[in-house]
Image 1 (cartoon, one colour):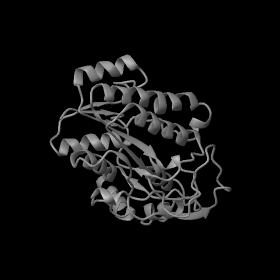
Image 2 (spheres, one colour):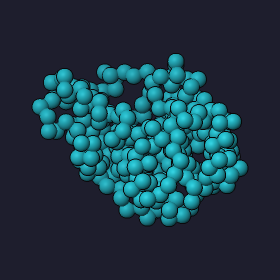
Image 3 (cartoon, one colour):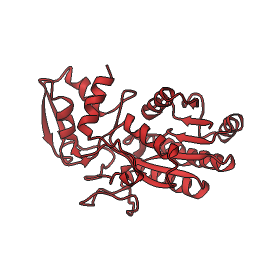
Length: 278
């Protein structure tokens, strides 16, 4: 099976390449400098030479606040136009497409867990373009897995865990919002899940992958810094405003019906990550 990865230099992309390498699978991995997914001719050339059977589309614009203003055009170009180009190429070359989406496609007003079938209602530009990306995948590609995730952290790239650890080096006290609830996701869990969908030939469709359990950003920060002397103070979103609106409760219902058995608790995943990052 020929595998192609976009966004190979990102958090998930690097985790995925490591996992596939461990499993002895060969693949072609492209970062943004190797493949501009908004360039249709460049995408066609890569697909023509690689003729992939499987495409893990990890490339995305993820600067949530910048997407509201100065990054709005790039946000759309990558998450919608670029995804459309990838989806059409997958259809042309009969490749399975795995598209990574987000909890931000929901508005965060549901009291319980969000099912893959629940109505979407994104409240920021990033969520809007990721939803549009889902829609172009469904429109242009027959063989696809759409995988929504949230609060991603891992060994590679920038994420909340690294931000907290870095701040802890220079601050004795930190404030973190406690009224936004979600599910942290270790990139290792996410990489294992998306490869599981393909390897076990799970039915095509929309799925949710995070680690089990849920928490607030404040609780997440407390767990990250529990072995330090840093004091973490809870604050409301109103006290810590951001450019882009964040859902208040975007707890995704885990797709356990797939048979995937590695939805470990987020605290367990965090502990494993803290060891792995060293």
